[in-house]
Image (cartoon, rainbow, N blue to C red):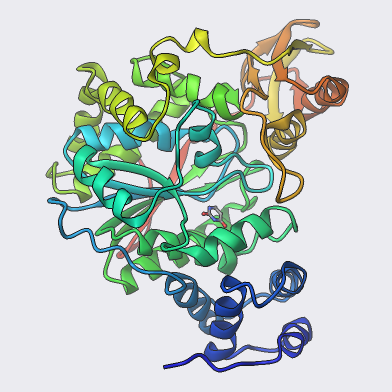
Amino acid sequence: MPIKEFNTVSLIRKKREGGVLSREEIQYLIRAYTDDEIPDYQMSAFLMASFLNGLNTGEAAALTHSMLHSGIVADLSHVKGTKVDKHSTGGVGDKLSLILAPIVAACGVPVPMISGRGLGHTGGTLDKLESIPGFTVDVTLDRYKEILEKQNLVLVGQTEEIAPADKRLYALRDVTATVESIPLIAGSIMSKKLAEGIDALVLDVKFGSGAFMKKHEDAVKLAETLVGIGEEFGKETIAYLTNMEQPLGNAVGNWLEVKESIDCLNGGGPDDVMEITHLLAGTMIYLGREAATIEEGIEKSHEAIKNGSAMQKWIDIVEEQGGDTGVIIKPESYPAAKHIESVKAEQGGCITAMDAYAMGMVSVELGAGRRAKEDDVDPAAGFILHKKIGDKVEKDETIATLHTNNRNMLATAKTGIQQAMTIGQSAPETLRQITHRADKHGLHKYEG
Ligand code: URA
């Protein structure tokens, strides 16, 4: 049935005044924007009106459906096995997809993964992958299917065929301060995940200063919304609520995070990264029917690191998608940023809190993210944290190392990191990394 035409300005005004748009009106907006009939400035106004006034359940459902059907839903029936993917709602230093995707694929579960670029203060899997020289995330539908069949894994971005509406809206939300909205996030995530051709999905829903949902209760709402949409479409969906009160791991920035992921795949890597990675990977292996329980899936995930099969899968997929495997095997051969400088503690004590949002913004300013849609990112930019919450620190001790090709940003970045770390006298309570699981049976406290 052809989609009815509407007056775009009237729809923006209606949303601005707090009105409720019909399914047809939302379908029109998404279709016309995807077809370049609505310019960015009008869509930005609509996004901001939706951000400020919210979208009700009916509008949110219409948004997800329209975004999903802006392209095709991939048919992956030629690939054997239960296809499972994972998506994060976004955080700082969140490189988990790079580690768990090869683990899960190496354990026999096909992983068709469509990711996004950096969004707001958070990094994006696509920018991280593209920091590997030659790695292409831009493929046709046929090539997407071919890579998955050959490697049991494919790591790409939204295309003109799959989730094209999200491709455009995502880039626009990144630079119009319209990210932190439950219906907009849900439409964005679920439209591309459902279009991939998956059978089941694992979600990492972040809460805390570095997440889009600062409050735990909002993250719970987002998790329940995402699980509800997944189940409505017949995909078994499990979400975990995980802590983003500080960056995950030590590295923040595209190549720096790839490098840390290589350490993890080689059996090292920070504990906070590996704890969540194994839980999410184990859940994917379970949903992919390669383990009878999540616990068994977690054991298989550990084994795939120990026996080297996950690292081998990572090398294979980098090669398959055109990347330089030389820098994966020898990360020290990667060209370093021109300016590498230490940030020192201004006083001694114990790190009691971090503003992970401010740290994400430091990384954007150093060049790892975009300020405008057309901006290129600097693959080498970012920082390494040497201290995390709970660590003791001496005055003038190095707390972070900045990496950038833009010398002008160094001074503000240094102050940014110093101000984002709170140094007190007594150790804070240990952070709980994973608090809850949400699935079709409801919300459960995570005791793991
Ligand atoms: N991840 C997405 O894909 N979209 C969002 O809006 C937020 C996180």
